Each structure stands twice: as structure tokens, then as C-alpha cells.
Length: 369
Image (cartoon, rainbow, N blue to C red; front, side, top):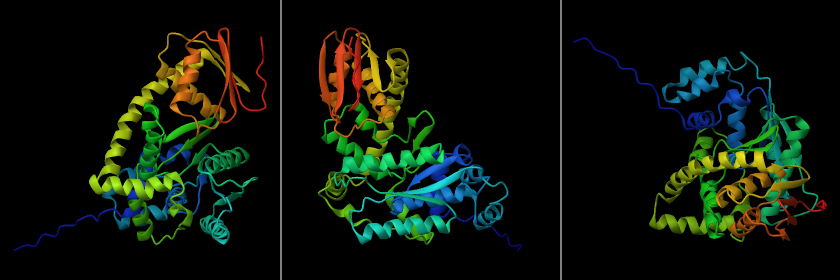
């Protein structure tokens, strides 16, 4: 009897699956030939993102190769590796590490680890430290973002890439929910949002779970750093991660995945609202040092709130302490004819007079009629 051999293609590696996820969310063709600043703490998620982008940018056929990653095998990988330099990328990657300096030698070791990683992968490296020490979550996030934006502008980069994961998104929604968020807060972290006219923030791993990321790095024999402060439940988000989520999963084992699906549904809603809000901004808003808003008594409050939140992002005003009540108060002012003046979190002042509402940051005088 004549024998017949069957050749089975090997399953994709865990690391290849991570690369395919990055390509699906953020195709390499969008960023390969421009500048990208990658925020990297040295932890598993940010190392996976930095390593993944460093590999993808060297592959001119990465989008095609990894969009069909379930069909490739070891020989295909070898062939792709051989063609890494066929079309060298015109853009650049910068590994950007912000050292808060709160953990002494451990913080210094984190910075050294990211620097060594960057050098080993022939990437530029940039580091920063706070002018003033802060230990609360909101202030530290603000410091990191300010550093990344400054680094991007100095380098002429088009993108800032951050490594937030699926669990980060779920934890954010739970945090927002307990703060009394509106529907927009239930849409979670945005995978892509503009920082300024020429700078965009992206999060390519937002739908990828931490366990998958760590398993992929282990398979690829890539170490990472563990931040001991991540176990400190004095920080609210750490408490959510280590206390609340495990309690929820003890009763609902697939809770993280389920909340992730709910976030996707809310995001579809948010996309529609944001489009309408953007049109409202174009017709009712004048951006500048002082933001001038034309009163509107016809547009629904959810649209006004979404427009205001977008303005806060563009102006880079702090949103951490802004609650639903704050957003509704400004929206209510826009929809009324009241003359009033009040302050908002972050020392943002709102002055309503006549047909205009003017909003300013600290140190900026609001012109008076």
C-alpha cells in the first residue's frame, strides 16, 4: 500500500500572536516611517510593546505576514528574518523611561534595564525625572505624560505608544464606575486619541491580557522588571487589581473578558457621540490660551459633555478629579443664560457671561467685556 504523508503547519508561537495583535490594532505601515516614542517602565507590558515594535519595524512585509500569522511556521519566520533589512524603515523608535525615583536602587535598576534593552536593540533612549516628587497616582500619570509629550515634540515624533492591557482597561472602568462616572467613563481607555495637531497617543495592546503577554515573553526568553510598588494596595488601582477583581472573579470567573466585551459595546456608542461632539466644537468653540464657547440651549447634555472632555484633552488640562457632576455643571452653564463664575479641579476657571462661556487654566486672565 502506498503511504501518504501529511504535512501539518505548526501552530503560531505565543510571541507571534502578540505581534499579530499589534499589527491588527496598529498596522506597521502607519508608523514604520515616522517617529514613535514608546513609554517603557521596564515591566512586562511595556517591554513586550517595545520589543514588538522594534521587530515589526524591521520587517517591510510585517502587515501581510502577521495578518495571516496562523499559517506561518518556523521556515516562514526564518525567511522573514532574512529580509529584515530589505527596505530599512525611515522612521525611528525611542524608548522613553520616566524615573519617579520613589524606590531607590530599584528605580535606578529599572532605568538601567530599559537603557540596556534599547542599546541592545539599537534604539534611541530618553529618560526623565520629576522636578517635584509626587506619590499620588494622578500626579505621577500627569508627570509621565508631560515627559512623553515633551520627548515627542523634541524628537519630532508622530506617535506616543503606551502598553496598557485588557486588565488595565477593565480596572479603569471599575475605578470610573465607583467614582460615579457617566456613560463615557464606561467606554474605558481610548486605544487612540490625539494629543495635539501633530501628535497621537496609541495603545496597541489594549485588548491583550497580561497573562498572554507574560507567557509570550517567557517563550521568547525575554526578561522584564517587576515593580514592587504594584503590590501596594494603598493605591486605589492596585487595590482594584489585587483585591476587588479577584473577589469578582471568584463568583464570575470570566468577569474580565465579559467586562471587556461591555467596554467594546460602550466604545461603539462613544464613537458616535464623539463624532457629533467634534462637529459641535467646530461650530461653537474657539481654542486658545482661553477657550471660548458659544452658548447652546438646543444640543443634548451628553453631546456637550463629550465636547468638553475632548477640549480638556486637547488643552492637556487635568481630568483626574473631574467627576460627572463637574462635567454636567459646565454643560448646564452652556445650555443656560446664567451669569456665573466658578473653579473646577486643576484650578480651571469658568466664566459665563452673555452668549459666551470662557474657560482658562491657572495663570491666564479671562478677558472681560
